[in-house]
Length: 466
Image 1 (tube, rainbow, N blue to C red):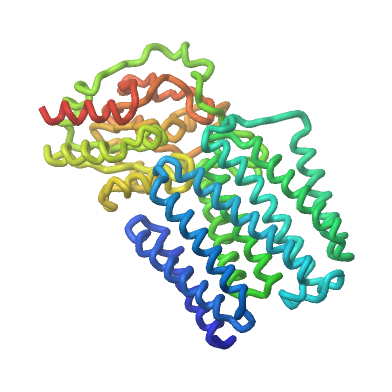
Image 2 (cartoon, one colour):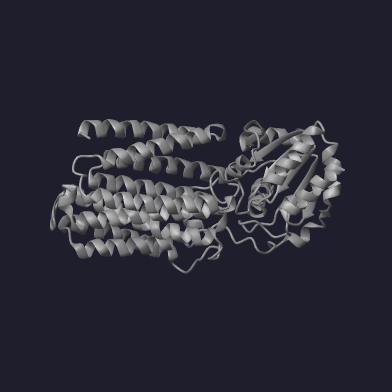
């Protein structure tokens, strides 16, 4: 394959990647977006394999690696639970970061293969690109590993803080810049590995103070990091498609991080330095003085919902943990048969990753035209007879509007308290990831339905069928 043909193939792949991002921006077109992305990647791989200079035993090794990686990916895809997608995404980000580190090391020790000079005499521009790809890749790897451990419950989801932590991170960041400058000026292999070690440590230290409430932002931010790492290495190896793809991922991840922060009324600096969120395992202080809560049963909820005109379902991480999306869809179908209007309200940071609730509802084949984002659905809560909240804690807490001292004050929330009746499905009175007691529990129009979200909703469905 000539250079011209491979470049044209890369251009087609790039266009398909852009179309994929566009498709993934809306649930209704997300499947088509995934197809565009897969076709684009297939074209990119074939074009790379047949580029000039790729002939020989190297192709056999690449095909072997593709077969192994494809088999592992297929195995994971068939066994992974939808609730485990956030940690899977974090794990994938770590692999992209480590790949950038390995490519940078290969370029350092075999620069002739990349056309960037000879060992010990690498072009200055290539050293800049290599060191940036190395640093960002190493930070992405270790940061993503910590995010995976937190999301998977193998590490505390609470912020891990110690004295002068942020000053230490700042000092390490400055030292990293100094080492990169020294490496670019001399190309020392010792400095290369010092940069790698320091970046690995910095990625670890940057993520451990992040609490569970900020995990959606961290997942999208690490996605951005992985893209920029790939773009930096793309410059090093002279691969145009890697540069374009990395830039697309980096830019889209950064934009998504901004959207997530806006959805929480927080800046990215505030996320990195704030240590916002706990494990949500205990009731927040102050709850006992708010008064008693009303406790209902699935039968109570079924009676009121069957006689309602409009019901808005608000899914949260509680639905994901219980894997209740299918039975929630069954409940909605029964209500629609009774002539009840049913809609779903999605908060941009509900769950553990961007779009988490949308993915779960899509798995349950919930019609796209029944799913609405915060800005679209909020005016309708005042017209709703029932809001059925499934573990969506912080994103429904009125304290975000009423309590200036609250850490979530100013965060846009779903206005569920305006519904005539609010059914809140939850295992206990424990606070959410922000560690803030939910005022909604104590409102006169709220009725708590304690228990596993799937079991409670199943009992509600059985009551509707009677």
